[in-house]
Amino acid sequence: MKSKETLRLTAGSLLLAVSLLIPSLLGGVVTLPIGPFTATPASHVPTLLSMLLGPVTAGIVGMGSAIGFFLRLGPLVGARAAMHIPVGVTGAWLMRKGMGFPLALSLMAPLHAGLEALIVLLFGFSLRDAGFVVGLGTLVHHIVDSAIALFIWRVVYVRTPLADLDNR
Image (tube, rainbow, N blue to C red):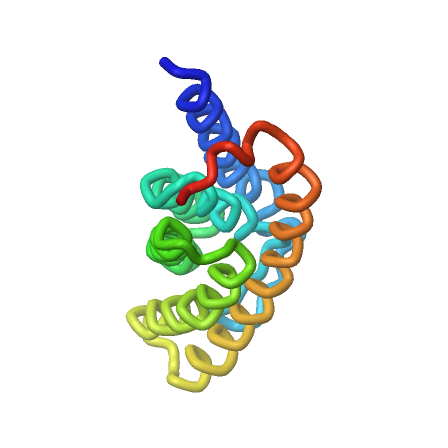
C-alpha cells in the first residue's frame, strides 16, 4: 500500500472512530434536547472533515455517526444522524469537482438542515417542529460545527501530510 493510501485510510479510520465515540460518550450527557431536535457538541465535525478525504470515506464516517446515535439515543436521532451520509458524500463530491472546503461546508448547511427536518416528519412530528425546530436547530448546529471543522482544518490538516490527500 502506498504511503498516501495508508495516510488516507488512517485519517478516515480515525474520523470513523470519533464519529462513533461522540454519541457514545457525549450523547445524552451534554446533548441539548428541544422537542425532536437534539444537539450534541461537535457531532458533525468528523463527517465534515471526512469530506476532505472523498465521498466514500465521508459516507462511511456518516454511517458511523448514524450507528452511534442510533445505539445511544434511539431511532429518531439515529435517522437524523443518517442524514450525515448524503451531506458528507455530496460535500465531498463538490470538493472533488473543485470547490473549496469552506464553500462546500456553507452549501451543505441548508441541505443538512432540510434533510434532518424532512426525516422527522416520518416520525409523526408537525411541520412546525420539523421545519422550525429541527431545520433551524440543525442549521445553527451545522454552522457551529463547521467553524470547529474549519479551525481543525486550518491548524492540523493544512500543515501536515494530510494536505497531500486533497479530495480533488
